Length: 273
Ligand code: C5P
Image 1 (cartoon, rainbow, N blue to C red):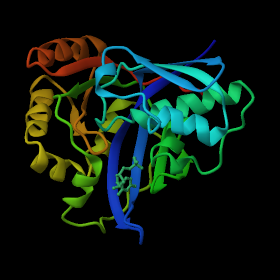
Image 2: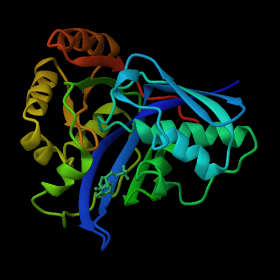
Image 3: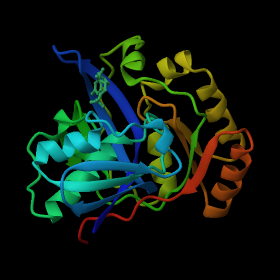
C-alpha cells in the first residue's frame, strides 16, 4: 500500500489580476501548506474510491470525484482510500490536494504525472509541488519560493459552504495590481509585515456572501493572531500566532463557537535541502 499526505493549501495572499477569455481569473498568490491534511492510500487493483474520516459525509465517491478524475487522467488503476480530515469546499485545497496526492501516489506506482494537471483544478499544480510557491496564471504558473520561516497557524472554518464561482462572480474589480516581489523572509515577523501590505481579493466578496467569515477573522485577531486572513475563496481562515501555545489556546477558544478550529504548523518542505 502506498500512502500520500494531502496537506491543506493556504493562500497567504491572493490578488486577482485579470480574467481570461474563458472566464477563469488570473491570480497572483503566495501559497504554502499546513501540516494538517487528508490522507490517500492506494493499492494496485481496479479503479475504486472509498471515503472515510471526519469529513467523509460531505463528499460522494462518484465518478466526478477529483480523486477518480485524477487517476483516470494518469491512466492509473488503484483502489483509493481517501481519509477526509479537512472540511470540504473550504478554500484550503481539499479536492485539489487529494487529486495531487493521488497523482503522486500513482507516480510512485509507475504511472507518469500527466501534463497540464490544472485541467483537474486550478490548485492541482501547486498541490503537486507541495512547497511554498508564487502561483500565477489561473494556477499553472509556479515560481518556487525559498523555505518559509516557522509559522504557528490556526485554521478556522465556520461550516458555511461558499461555492468558488459565486465568490469570483461577486468581485468588484478584476484588474488588481500583482503582488510586489516576494523576498526571502528571515523570520515570521518579516513575513507577517510583508503580508500586511497585500490581501486576499476574494475576502470581501466572500464576507458579503457569508458574513460569519468576518466574525471568524475578528475572533482570530481578538485571540492574539498577528495576521488573520481568509484562504482561497473561503470560508476557511487562518491566523498567524507568535508561538505554538498561543495558537493552541486560540484554537481551543475558537472551537467553542462551534467552528472547526485547529492549530498547526507549516508542512515539512518536501524539497531536498
Ligand atoms: O479550477 P477549479 O475547479 O478549482 O475552479 C472552480 C471554479 O472557480 C471555476 O469554475 C471558476 O469559476 C473559478 N475559478 C476562476 N479562476 C481561477 C480558479 C477558479 O474563475 N483561477
